[in-house]
Length: 102
Image (cartoon, rainbow, N blue to C red):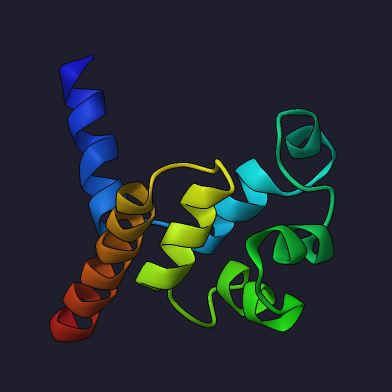
């Protein structure tokens, strides 16, 4: 069991998803709306106080979660700012390692 967990952990370090995907998975959609999320990207952007295009760029992985966005996500009740920045840092580190290894 520990060996499987170690392999999964190593894989996640090499291939973490962009944190924008976690916004889609946990904060936007019908299921998320029932748990305090937003029903749509437009509604989520409005709740966060950002332009829909800005949020769309984040959730599609075209830009990073900034400290400002992390605080906005935290203020909406969608996790701590630290956890969002940690996800972004893990993603950025994995990409940098992949670039250097290539």
